[in-house]
Structures are given as C-alpha cells and as structure tokens.
Length: 331
Image (cartoon, rainbow, N blue to C red; front, side):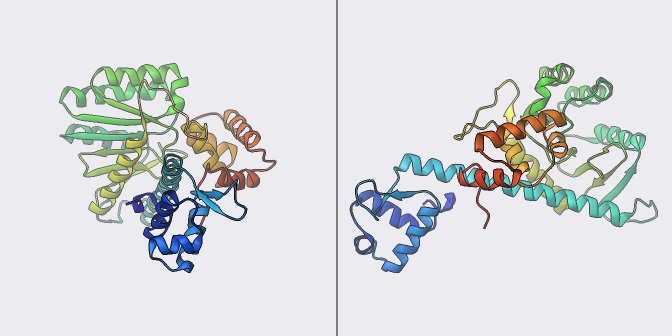
C-alpha cells in the first residue's frame, strides 16, 4: 500500500510488524512476517535509510519504528523532494531539446523540419503570437518566468489577453513568486484575474512558454534573450510532454492571493528552490535569474541558508541539506 510513497512491500511488512510488535528483534520479526532473517535485516537497512526506524532509547542495539504520523510525513516529504528533482531534470532535458532543435535547424528558413518553425527577432515572434491568438479556440497556458515585467511588455500583451478573455478562452498563467515585490507586475496580474484569467505563482520556472489549444508551443531559443529567437513546436509528442510539464508546475503553484507556506523544514518554496539550485552548483547570478530576483538577493538567500545549515561552503551546504532531509539523497 505504501509503494506509492517509495516503500517496497518487504520493508513495509517489516515496518508494520515493528509497529505491532515493538519488542521483537530480527528473529521475532522474521517469524511474524514469514520472511527470512536476511530479508528482515535488508528491510531494516532500507527503513533506517528512510528514517522510519531509530535506535531504541531503552535497549542498546535494538531498533524502534517511528510513529506512523511521523513516518508518513517523512515519506511524503521525501517523495515531494524527489518529484521536485525529477521536475528539474525534465526542465533541463526540455531546455536541452529546444537548444538542439534550434542549433540543428541553424535558424535557416530553407531548412524544413516537421513540427518546428523558427522565428527570428521580436517582430517575428510578436507577429506569430498575434496570429496564434486569433486562431486559438479553447485554452492558453503560459509560463512567465522573467520576474518583474516591464510596463511596455505588459501593455503590449493586454489587447491580446483582452481579446482571448472576451472570446471565452481559458487563460492559465504561472508567474514567479518574486513578482509580488513589483507593483506594476502585481497590478497586471490583478488585471488579468479580474477579467477571468487564472494566475498562480511558482518559486521558479524552466523557461518562457506559451501553449495554445494543446497543439502549439512557443518557446525561446535562448532563455537569456527571449526576444532574439523562438521556435514554434507542433509535434504531438513534444507538445504532449510540454503540456504535462505545465500541468505539473500548475498543480504545485500557489493561487494568487495566498501566502507562501513553509514546508516541514521551515523552508519557503523559494528557499527550497534556492537550496536545490545551490546544491546543483548554480551561481548567485543564475539562481537570481531562476527565481526572478537580483543577484544581491540571491546571494543573501544563499548565505542565510548556509548559515542555517552551519555550512562553510556551497558543497558542504549541499551535503548538509541532504543530511537534514532538505534534499533527496542521490542514488
């Protein structure tokens, strides 16, 4: 039953037996579960690694199962961390795939590739987005990862957004949590929400992305300069994967108007993302861009997290973050 939380059936059987028979040792647990003693010992190793058992305070060398409420919280927290790490790997793969598409295509209009259209320059990008807006029938899903947006870009997007909402098109947009600190962006987000658009906030986003009717995706070629060039993707497999990525981020993002809730370790979503990026070796500048904050703010956040961990280096911070359960251990 707990396999969905990452616990194999043998380890689950031993864990349940330990809860029901807390005084039993390896031999007793083997008799209760019908397992071989070697299997019980292997299961205890797994349970120990997952922090579901602890040394007994009363009997030296004996192990005791942690209570189910604590144990389930540990498993769920670990699974959430693993999902976050998997999402990061998916995001990195998607970015690498987009980069490969752009490089292979070499941005030459004479080179035709099914399901890929190249757009060079801001005029071409905005022109194509305008035509997609006129053609969309049901839904638009957007990642807006650039932190504070300029008034010019927000004002340029309003006529398109208004047209979509007037036609009853469902609009879902994920902004960075850091946009709370920029009043013009907050006003724009509230403008969208007041007209029926749905907005959520996430601590970080993989790239700028617009999906229309689940059939067409527009993403920049270079995340550092989204106005330079973009690709329009229509291949079924690629679009399906990117729709799944959007839904994954959307489901974990917070609705506009709600405050960030710290996790069981006292980390806000933005701090949890920052420590993961820190452990991955990202610089302050790169972390700032992913979070949509200044390099100075990113450095201050990193320093605060290192102090809380008692780490003197970023490498040590990554190690201690795993030891404290802030990050999943690497296989």
